[in-house]
Length: 334
Image 1 (cartoon, one colour):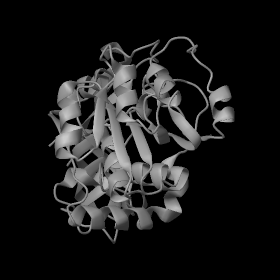
Image 2: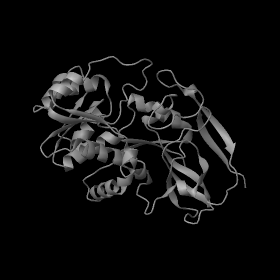
Image 3: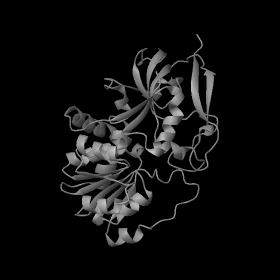
Image 4: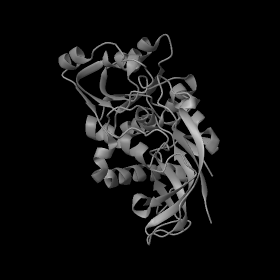
């Protein structure tokens, strides 16, 4: 029986903020399985800020998306048919098939979720790349010490909310930066952050100063731009800054011009380091074991924003840049 898949491809490269006409929905008939392949049906797919960078035809740590090909990214799928010995119909797997309802992939390219987390979306979030990014970006890059002040921008996002919780587990003071009063309450009242400030407030600079009376020892940066400019003014000697994302800059159509961090880093004897979570692949078991243990103990909480319907995938992705999500943003496909 022929299986027809719906998929979303990159129709054109954006200039500035992506628009819906940068994407195109297509229907394709999938080929029969060859030995070692599986047919999977997508249950949940991930939309992430890094995908914006891959829409540009520029050199980066991963190749750019190709025009007229599907947007790839993390997805939780169910095996429908298998010619791979280690996989059976009904198995739940993690793949990189991305924005398509069905796909034929090599069995060696999927990770069986055994046991499957509950809910399944944790494999895309707290117990997946999101959690690993938070874990290694904070612990390995910044080496936080008990009693230090850790500031997180984009703190109500998928990675940021995990970073703040890990900081608390390690005995640090966690200060979050987010873009709405509801998110501020969520960080403090539900996740246990010591303080949180709204960067959209006209008193943001003063609020940040009050939240960090002893300065900033560790800054986990998901945002960049003017928010980070303000945080850097508060860094202490030997501060460590982890560059995870720069979402405030992704949609600019020309290079940003702002305060240069060099003098501050020099006079504060501080370190600013970018990182890519894939470079830690050999240590993923370590990170996942820690995250799973903390989650089981109730010390890590998860929050997700689930958008229902494959036809709403593009809207979900564009919503990342206006802050529609609290926590991990996923699309429920089927």
